[in-house]
Length: 374
Image (cartoon, rainbow, N blue to C red; front, top):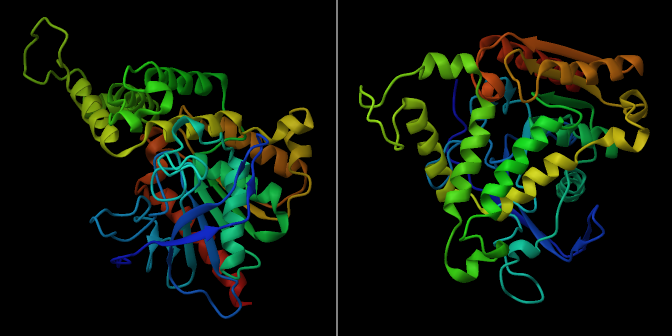
């Protein structure tokens, strides 16, 4: 299948303040985004792709740094989300470190980087920012909003917050809220960052340092939760890096070497304050809280059709969490399709080329395309 090829991001500035769930606001902000394919004359074929924790607007194609988009295997000409049929939009959320206004940007009053003073944001705040960009593009209703993991939470929030603005909601490897175990993992990762001596209460930019040690540990913790035990066992097992035990506390096992590599790489490109912000947004997402925990009541007024996909070995967002959503939607007599994929890859499966998963996605987008043609 063909690649989109080279892509160039765009940016859009907003002077109108963005009111946040916390009661704070962003006085003005910029969103960075990419688009793929062509918007049709009716402006009816647009699909918004929402990114997860360490991803960005760069969904597909090759950017100026030679980096391939994080969902390039799914999005492109002839791919399951076919850019010959759909106009695909990727938006970098406020608070991120990939171009949109975030902690590394100047505070409008002090002129110094926001750092820890960047306001806490929620999934709902991101959706409110996204819809302003969608409005500016002249799109009245999206054909679909799609996301995996935290991106799936954003898709769910779209269906609840702006029910008339999307026809389909597609959530992959996602959940209606985080379990206590998931919140615990996020807190351990945040503590690793905040207790790093180079964190300086979030204002490390002024000191010319990066809390790398904390970022490395945070990434190692996160990465373990994204993989299944089967994958770690088959890929690394108990293999020793140098073939023999050295009786010290340096790297001995291949899995240790792999995790340190992932941590080192992550600390080179990701911002620590952004990590804190995004994991807090994950923690706070719980739309049913306003309805006494009743998911069916929460989704009572949605109008979109739904596709939910889960993976059997995903223990961070297990299939049971998707089935909670399916039951709530079925109880409310909403149209929902559900696929539970028997895949060995853990949470990361939503980014990989499982043929059964991609067949589900392709079939569903073909159905959306056929709706557009009628």
